[in-house]
Length: 447
Length: 70
Image: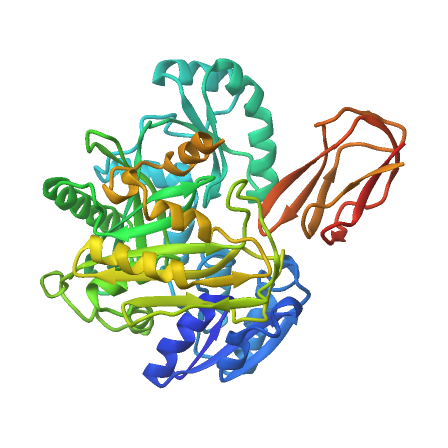
């Protein structure tokens, strides 16, 4: 591969550029009008405007992206995460135009993108799934009947959903009655399909995922787990590895199960198998993300590997660089997602970073798409930066996180930095005994 | 004359009221999308909608007047 078009923006575009540069690969960036001043545009070897700020007119404009890739003689397209990264139609279009799509096959993306098909596929492969409707529910009556059997609370989810969007928790039949139509309508509006399904709501759950990698020769390995239980609105805020709560036995079980999941779909390239783990360490398949995850640096830090490099190697047909036995981990890493949002209401807070600086030593990795003076616009996701701290153990990592957030200066918009400053001194976080409802319960207690 | 303004920049996703409607304090009158999130706009006071200043799909900045309440 000599030239790669990056169909993304911000920090992940910069991240991909970094690896390409190390591998001697040229990069082509694309940008909307809102992003023309961002660092990734300047860092890429070449950059092209793709349209107005709204995503439909820019980063989701697949034909324009492919046109630029072909015109500029790119060999491959890296979709990053979000946007078109899990769009099977786009992957197919890329391949049909004689380009390499850096990711799994369109067939895999399609199967795992439909949560109902994904569930069925995993069940067949012997991977435990959350008790639920199995298939989609076709009427409110059916939903009520099933929820009664499973037991409340239940989660009502859009089949095409993901990233915390399109799901709602129903405490009782009344809630299900009132949420059913609106969830279907939202599913239709956001994901183009009004299919919904029901799952048991697992209380005090932890969200733990396993990084997997497969190649076209049928090899598959895992790169350990990431604990992503600190969330708000079903979206991740802090991720860490290793999980501070998992027993050695459960850990091995998770890895084994994740590999079964990978093999069930002949997985090629980087993927993540997400599990929900209850307080008894029972675990269930949640979904499979067929792309590089936002939180991949956590895995890179503990393994010393470059996952983007692996993605490129595997996409060009190479074998996985290492066998399972050769992959080792060392120490602990924690990632904090710095968002442009109100620290109390979690509402978005776009604005210009009038001040954005920090003091950091070499155990802190900062992946950001912005520099001081850049605007964080309302058109895209609110993530400003990922701060990844590490150490020989979790306590060391936490100590450098405290130091980092103390020295962080961020002005011009509201950020969730105060949440981290608090979190880093709270017993539940320090002991590692937190669940996905943690941030919300802290918030409630503060009111 | 009182107004309901945008708490943050974003795109108008939905408008739930029209001119002449009576709105109650706390009632959701509009939905704004910002940073991939839907933010409900609530009426800060009760009254009658005098004018809706924006259309669905409009981009609004923080502080822009969305609705005039009589």
